[in-house]
Length: 208
Image (cartoon, rainbow, N blue to C red):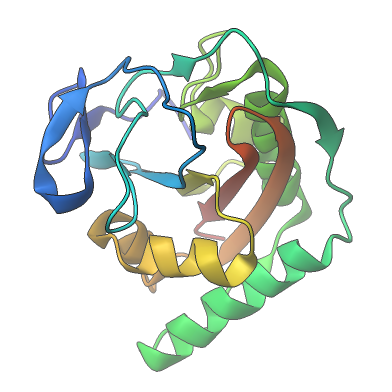
């Protein structure tokens, strides 16, 4: 892939985050006393990007920029490549794709590595964004693993199980569109533990 694809926000400016009920809140809002699940999606070429929380929850997370907090709640831990939660997310993705008439995605080790490293980085450095703190985009991270066909990225934080994070993604139009895009052929899923939200999830998709 060549230059980094353009990005834009859907239903919010770059300084706002989409909240439950459709209201907008400042992107750099500080968290309250409870960790709350959040999610964000990004696609290439005219790409939408949103940050959302499940119904009934308040938002505290940035939409287009990163949100960072000074004191991590948990110490960072690595999620192994054989994490059953990763396997289950892939399975659930393919269940949803089958329902939509799309072929199953296969797991690509390069996408899985890019996804895992980004989730671990968000957990370790306590931020939530498609853009790494050093300025790298999803496409930069994916290309660094030797994969040239990255097409979309979903991220989420605070969801404790594969079923919960998949429900959050499927209840959000942008994330659902990435999951059910029949043009996506490959997937990598990564999990990082630590940071403000306790657990961070990344899905990286590709077209080959």
